[in-house]
Length: 348
Image (cartoon, rainbow, N blue to C red; front, side, top):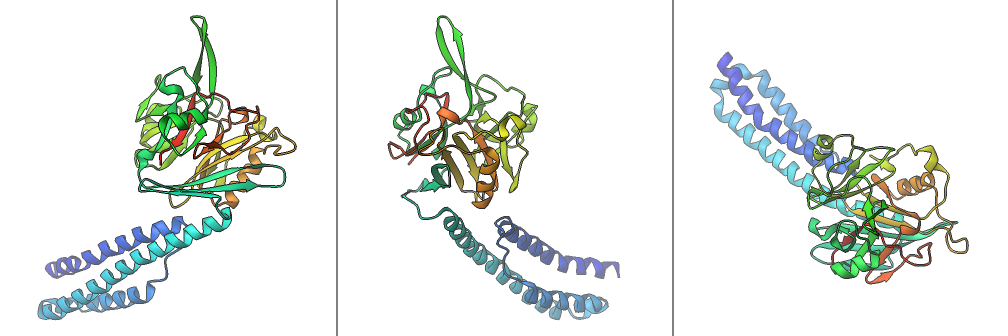
């Protein structure tokens, strides 16, 4: 009887593996909030045959050929279901993309290449305006964090960074502060800055809600508040910047520190959709006849309305800049662009 049970387990093993495969395929659709169609009827048939097989396990040694037939039939069913699940995932991708576009409205500009697909949208609300870029990344190396003039301590406007690197899209990056040394001013990034997998000026533990946010080498958005280097490195960061605060995590709004809650300001945001597309947003402010700016809590509401699953607030105010195809689309609050320590650019 022990040998028979072993043989039964051997027969069951491929179906357990196939069930795991189906589970993994449907997980992606769950993340998009677009579940795959029910596959229960075919699976119920498989389970019924397996139950019948188990009930008659005592006769296995006398019915090997019949069991092989059942096994092959069920294997074919599971393979067909796996293929069907793959097809439905592709359909779900298309449906999810359409859902995003319906929320964003018609694009005002597009760019498509083998590296990225970019759609630009105008953002118009009751008392604030701005611009949105949805970026579908095919080549993760197309999205870069850039130091001002590629040098520690230097700064440059977003337009200069875009032109210098040959990028098609750029926004300002993390926060910064001035340091005076040897009779001149240096502009240094706050917190942690990483380019090509290396920290610039070492790792600094978080303080005052300061986060690190950026991209993995695979192009996935990552970030959080990190008090030690090991926790950060577990997320495999490749490049990123620091500012405050985290806005959205797993589709849920995060608590906004009180000192940041009520001010309407220009804003710069980086976020991600459930399908891995990046969303870059710049909101203008401090211009009553154009755009007053937006509070972070109201911006959280807008991000959730747009379907964003994770989002981080980058440096705002006079630093906020949105450059596309060589033009500054937004209206910087200083009347001109501010030179900043870091920019995030997207190559064509």
